[in-house]
Amino acid sequence: MESQFVFLDKEELSLPAMLDRLQIPSRQGVVMMPFFPREFTRVHFSRQSYMTDDLLRDTNIQIKVRNIWDTYRAMGRRAAPVGGDTLQKMMMQVRMATDKIKARGGKILFVRTPSSGPSLMGEQKGFPREKYWDPLLNITGSQGIHFLDYPATNHFICPEWSHLSVQDAKVYTAELARIMQTEKGWTFPASTNKE
Image 1 (cartoon, helix red, strand yellow):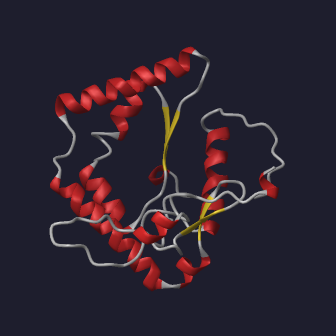
Image 2 (tube, one colour; image 1 turned 30 degrees about the horizontal axis):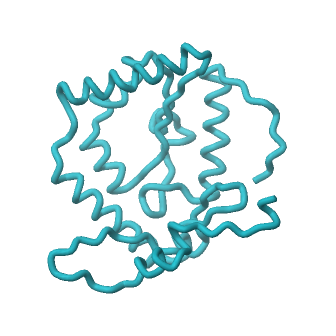
């Protein structure tokens, strides 16, 4: 049925959404969140979101997106990092959720996908692995795949520091599936999806 109809994305294509994207300066005292350029990603029929060729070709668009990430990073620096009892409570909430999934026969695998540049540096500084990632796996008793642990995945450069290009995403996904199967013992049904 979807191939016969067009579904408008009200977050992107409705009149209010388009008006919100006009580059009108904010009134004094009004804080507007930045909008990602339309050339950043496209959602395909399969509901997969892909970085556009325009973004990959045009460093000006990449810079716009990087500036947005910088804005969010600056906001994050003003907040105290989660730690102490608050972090432990959060970890226990995740453990309770993963225990429920496991009790129903589900399997858990945490995946840390690639980032690069200032995004990666900020993540490493603000959320050190030994304080967040390692305890998460330990407390939940779950497996994890961290992109920095594998030579086949630790070298990617994200054009805007946070997402892989389409080509790199294909390589990364194939390697992720290989690691899941050969090192983590996961199995997958045969797929006919070619996208």
